[in-house]
Image (tube, rainbow, N blue to C red; front, side, top):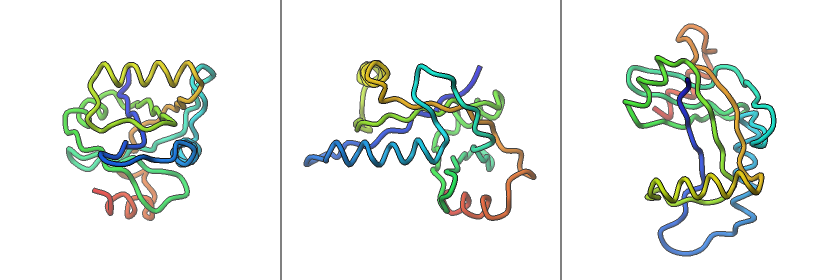
Length: 140
C-alpha cells in the first residue's frame, strides 16, 4: 500500500496556456523527481516527502523549494504507509476537476505516454540534510 500524489499543471480560470510550454514545464518536474514514463519500471527515488506534524512537503532535487501537501488526512495516512507514488501529468488539469475528470485525465495521459511515475518514501526527521530541511520549511 502507498499514498499517491498527482502533480499537474493547474489550468487557468481565464485565458489559454501554451500546451507545449505546459508539457515542457511538467517534464522538468518529472525529471527533478526522477520519474519515468508510466508503463515501464517505476523508479524508487529515495526519501522525498518531509513531514512536520500534520503537514507534508515534497522535495524536488536541485531546487531550493518544496511543494506543500495541504491535506492532513493524506499526510497522516502517508506517514503510516511510509511509501508514496508520485504521478506527474504533462497536461493541464483544473484544480476544481471532478473525480470523473481526473480519471479521464489519468487514462488519457497514460494512453499517450504523458504520465510519469516514481516511488518515494517519507524522510525520517533526522535523515533530512540541513539545507533540504531549510528549503522545505520555507514551503510549509
